[in-house]
Image (cartoon, rainbow over all chains, first blue to last red; front, side):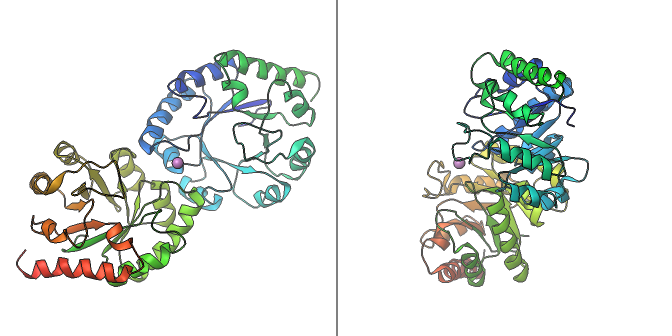
Length: 211
Length: 211
Ligand code: NI
């Protein structure tokens, strides 16, 4: 799943309205490696219909599609996996429902949660927020030093998340982490393909320099 | 499932807070035949944990537990089925995910939707609102005449829903419908067991009188 470096792009229901499908297409064409569909305040039917369309695009470009929280949507559209937060379904239950073929990622916010995650049947963890973020206003900042420690501790790949943009992405990569999750850095304006491309270039540039 | 008369009790996240589990216990002890767990604005983890507890109570009293909308929660706790609204997962998809052992109910609001429901793999329909309701403020009133027609048209059992209480329940039963769904009529105050018992008595009284 994580052929480094990985640009992991998460959709946002505030930033993306009717343009969701095209926005994700642009993000992939710019360089996104994995798409996570995240919606918290939509009817299930709307989520299902959006996810079905995203699945078609992701299949076309051969990119994994991960569904945030909603295992029912993931099952309904045969997504590649789910991303689970600490307030979502317990991971063991998610694994039982989804089976062992699907990817399960878990959000972690501190090193205790990373250690707990090591005992769980998951494929990767998200760790953050790395920086302050507008997408999740209540997110606590974990910072780059904690990210380094998370990578030392974790038995599965670590995806850095939270406030990462083209100004600070190189600082993240300097920690050795090449799995980078972004939301607004890609979807903040209409230049989605360009935003995605620029972030991917910065990721690749760093990699060529020896990480 | 519907051994007439059936008192179908739906939980409400505004009326029930920390007392959800005890409230459902009281409702069953008063006479509730089926419980539907409905939550729209809770974290998935909280829904899972509440549903797990409700399952234990419903199993103890041998009453079916139906989950509103969330097929992931239904699968997670091995509920007896799901209740799906017109804005939820398409019924065919729900059936594919849940399998044929589980109950699927569908909300219908007018006779067109009842006719559409006849083509779908469902076990019952809800029909309403029968009366104006405070629980779902946007619900359109279908009325008792439409309920009669819905029962004529429907190929599956019809559960009358929406604004039914002990003042008007006999009018509903007079239509020939003995499957009655209630929310606030049971959970409106602390006398949950009494409210449930009173509604069940009215249902049973009418039945003895010849329906
Ligand atoms: Ni909400």
